[in-house]
Image 1 (cartoon, rainbow, N blue to C red):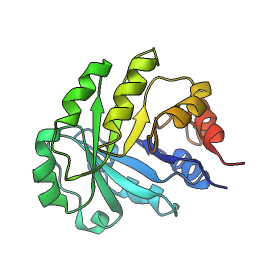
Image 2: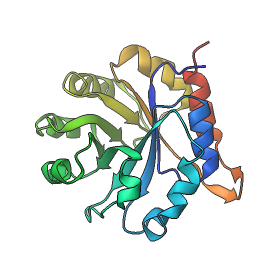
Image 3: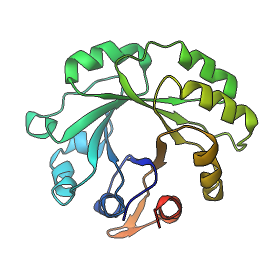
Image 4: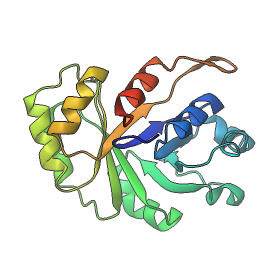
Amino acid sequence: MALRTRVKINNITNLHDARYGAGMTVDLLGFSWKKDSMYVQNPDKLYEIIQWITGPSFVAELDENLLPIPSQYQNFFEYVQTDDETMLERISSQYLKPIILEKTVALPAHLEYLAEIPLENVEMLILKASAPLWNQAWKKSISDLACHIPILLNFNYNASQIAEITQEIPIVGFAIDGSTEIRTGINEIDRLAEILEILEEE
């Protein structure tokens, strides 16, 4: 079993999502390391999940506080992620790990700004948008930006549009938000499962 593109699942909060993603051979699993994260409040909850996972690389999703990661957990994370491009140099020196930059954009024209940001410390860019339309303007702007940096796309697209996106735009893959655990072991994973099944190689 393999996926046709790289995939990151964002904000893993439960073992079910982590094991499902690993079983579907996703590349990256993101864990929030922000001020209100359950892992910051109780780091042992992180170990309760990752001890069962092999395969994907783990990503520490940071906020502007750049909270320290306890030494016993630092080696679990292979990447760090931020949404603040002004902190890239500081993050690079503090964590000494490859950086993923996530940016939310509202219009295709906003991507022109991203093309001007120094991205030498960034290994991948996640583009996130709530735009309901997936049109030619987005395709062209993302294709132009993809010439400068590997892109994971996290748009409000329909799962049925994925084949079109992968054929027409030179992105390296997709970022997908993790699901909510309704109760222990029971998750809403419809969108996650639908996208991964479409990306699965036959």
